[in-house]
Image (cartoon, rainbow, N blue to C red; front, side):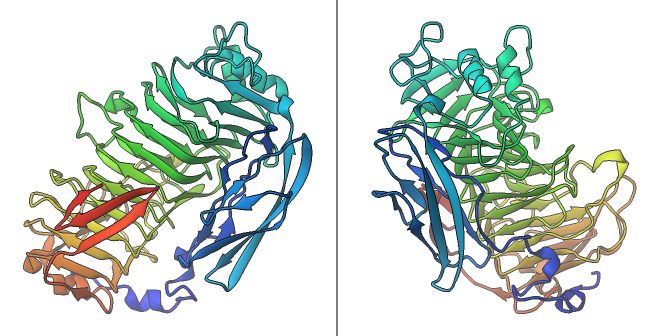
Length: 516
């Protein structure tokens, strides 16, 4: 059945209990973004993002700030300034009352650097002020942002918008195009957000928001519909952030990879929900996804973090990696997918998928979590033979017709030094075929290798077909054969019941069926 790499892995185990290779570069942090520009008389209402690899309880506090500023338990800052000013803020983030990190930043209260858009506005007669807002996020607003050279906040008032966006038509939409040429700075980003306590819904008749340069922040918007090649309702590149967003119903041919939220760079997503983004004419093709991450690209480096994000509703894939490589790596933390055909698809060196919930559709015939062949890196070099960390997740394949709950295949015929590392997961499978828990093999277009390497330890598994739970390189094996690839694995005899909350949505799972 192939040899276990447990001994190799154990030789380099660090403090986190796994080899250091699998760990993200920062074990705790407060994200780079903050409410840099705000308007008098308007609550800043901005959620900071904290991350802790060990998943300890997070406690926020304000060390320095203006009178009247407060911070919620989830890191949301509140303050309604009465006058224009620049104020310094320092916040602390405590982890289970022990370790802590701090962040200091300046907030500028500057009404002239705020732009307003409203369903009652007018792009011809408005000037973008609170009293005379624009009507849409199109040329008028883009021109105002461009003339400010960034460093501004765009507020969308509550209500519905229907707009057509064109980002690359320099004749008819010159300022929309120019936004992707702005040279923004980390301490002076552009924030496009909801007016606090209001719910703007942006209905797309063309492409979605497409910003590929650094330091854009999207906050508190609902984006619906849209169509366009290699795109989605929200596309971000470089060092950017999206928070408290809902992106849904992007429809385009599967040949153009329709998606809800597409990321190419070291972005931070926090409490983003994406659902029902797929090709309506070919709904089962794997090119459709709710979240799509590009791990390679020109001048892209760093680490992207998806934190407390939810793939909810239909698509072929919930979270997907395409164009994987070494330039930018993805870390999934406390996220969930409920209802897609395949909760996770794609492989990338040093990706971490942790503390998350993956419940495939009850009608799915696909794999719940698939570490599978994805597009190679540039210049013909394929380097996806190194490992990923899949740790402390709930993974459920509720369909009796489904394939393996966990599947992995790589693109080389050689055994990787750092294999896929499955640790501490709870796995339920109702599939009845061979390989109903785990299928793996080293795949190329010409051959199937006769061995495969994986670390599988401290996992808890439920399956009604334990004798055929495993397939490795075409050979069927039992659950005991899979357990031999690690230590301290266990079985449980009856399906579990689970309750959890992701992105503010309460979800229950009983007998493999999810409800919310």
